Amino acid sequence: MGVISVNLKSIQATKNENLSGGIEVNNNVTPIDVRELDMPGIGKKGIVIDFQYISKYSVNGEKVAEIKILGEVYYIGSDMEEILKKWKKEKEMPEDPYIVIINTIFRRCAVKALQLAEDIQLPPPIGLPFAQKSKQE
Image (cartoon, rainbow, N blue to C red; front, side, top):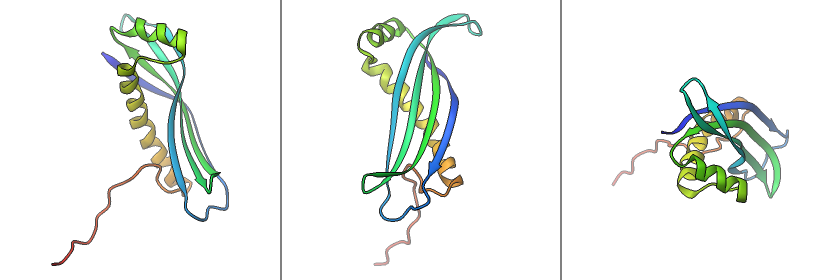
């Protein structure tokens, strides 16, 4: 099955007053905890991955703004035991489910961070497409 749900638990956006110069944005997802959970709504056991997403805005290495989202991912799959075992031993997940989980978090949180950045007048944390005037030959 894979990822069945993403639940955002906390959303925070802050910025300093002085935002001048070349702003750099760094987006990062960090798994915080992995645990087993009974999911009575679907009649199965699953795992929950607690995570932190941060869009950090900096100028010359100094943090000038930050968007921080805490949440959890609900996951069901045949590899749950392997995920739990590796997390308990190494605080890491196997690569294949990790990629699926992290990409799901990035997709969900990047959209929310984009909205928040606009609300507090920050540059978008992700690249956006834009139209350009066609070149005349």
